Length: 471
Image (tube, rainbow, N blue to C red; front, side, top):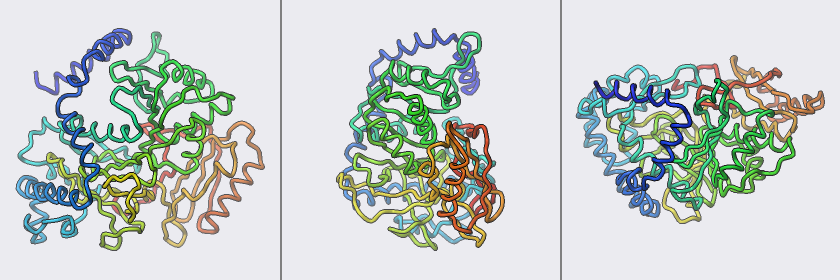
């Protein structure tokens, strides 16, 4: 039996095991010391990250350039796509000595990743040592790619846990996650709204079942397990807070921090979530392709780029810029199975010129958005972020909203009406749209019963059907 068959068999056995027996196994596994469960690599990388975050920029750049040179040599010698591109452009590995030389290499687009995936695989890496992943496909065309299996745990989690440490949390902290994970059904096939994993000390709350009728269940679960930190999509956390508030509930738990990810955190969401739970919000920026990640620290002055992992370029008109809105292009330094060099993320951000008052040497960035996520095409052909519209401030009687664009200069605004919604609220929404957009868009308001989430549980602020550059 091959490894793939063995994994498939183990998965079927696990899924066939009654929920109660699974819990017993998790409690037993949770008693195993962390040093054994997480492994030496996890703690080795964690210890190194604790030191490297304080490096001065010069030392970090030296480290990045060293890793970049090794990655370029590997890509030229073992990856058919890069060997072909280098030869076509007359580039030798020695020509890429520092980050400043990266501009000699063409940008890798999602479309190229989709069509050239086979040639982007390294010939000297066993495919069994890779894990196949995919993007969420918000444009309707998901992209499949491979990552080094050894890094999916030993390298990925230490970076993830470092941001928890910035909030003063250790490895044994009890967490909750409002997420799109599939939960096992109850007896009789009834849906399970929450589940607790004692081995991971993690309470999982389903985003798919979030509704007014279930709000008591969410409050009960939070009170029962008392997590100190809560992870979640901003849209789901915002809705949970709205339901708690409408029901007249006080916060069921007092976390030390809320950690948001997967969607761009809007200002009104930060205010609503933070005010209700009475704790700071730590936002995370990353993507399925694993080419870049950044997180807010305790000072909340921007997102610290995890430079140990990636080189992140902010490119405008072909030049690397600071302090300006620019395209984010990233290179993951330690993924050798399918190297993504100068990957076009589709996001827009700004590399900040100031250093954070926390004292860390990791550079700061601000995420502006991504065209395929929240930029709409105006009548005149310009790109405008729909985030400038602040509907929650216009009215408190809207549960959810989402923009949809199918034509240039035209938008559909889908609204889920909340309790107490009236014609006055419609007028306030139209006034807000007119004030922010002027005559750049013709906006049609469509009232809907609910806004479906993506397969990964997200509610995009903008569903963009227009083809944009890089897609």
